[in-house]
Amino acid sequence: MTGATRARSDPVSLTEALERLLPHHEDNPDEVACWLDDQQRRGRIPLLGGGIVMASSANPAMLGIVASSVGRSFLYVQMRQCLPGCHFWEPGHTVESLAQHHRFWTLAREGFERCVPGEDRGDAAPKQRRPGSASAWIDIVAPNETWSRHTGKRLHDLAEHEVERINTEHRQKAREQSCKPPPPLRCPSVRAFQAEVAARKKRS
Image (cartoon, rainbow, N blue to C red; front, side):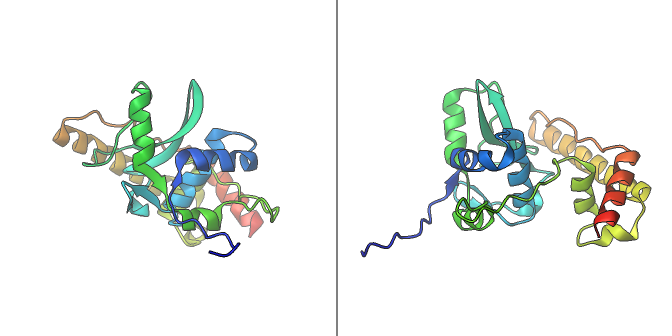
C-alpha cells in the first residue's frame, strides 16, 4: 500500500455514530437519535441487523432508533414488533445484553459518511423534527410534497388513521407471538398539524 488511506467499509456502530454526531446536535443524544431515525426512515443511512439491511419502510411501525440515558447516554434500536432473529433490548435489561445489541445493530458506513456532517467542511446536519411530531407524520402520510394538497385537519385525520392502524397491528402481533406490545404511538393535535402546514407554506 502507498501512503494513501484506504476508505473504511466496516459498519458504523451506534456508539461511534453517537460520538460523532453529538457535536452537531448540541450534545443532545435525543436529537442525535431523532436525526439518525429520520435518515434511516428515508433510506439515506441503512440500518443493519446482523449485517443485513433492514427495510426503511419498517420504520416507524416495526422499529426505530432512540436514545437512552440509563447511567450513560447511548443509542439503541427500539423494537415495536416481534421480529424473529432480531436482537431485542429495552431499559432494564443487562449491560451484557446491551453489548450484544450493539454488536447486532449497526449502520452502513457508506450511507453514514455521505450524510453525516463533515468536520472539515463546516456544514451542519439539517435539523429534523422528532419522530412522532406533526412534521414526521406528514412526511409519512403525504410524502413528496403531496401535503400541500391537504389542510392541516385532513393531514391530522390521515395520521390518526395510520396511528390506529399501526397500534392495532402491534397488539395483534403481540397476541400472536405471546409477547409484550410496544408503547402505543400517539397522534399530535390538529393544531400541531395546522401550525406545521402554515410553517411549510411560509418556507415554500
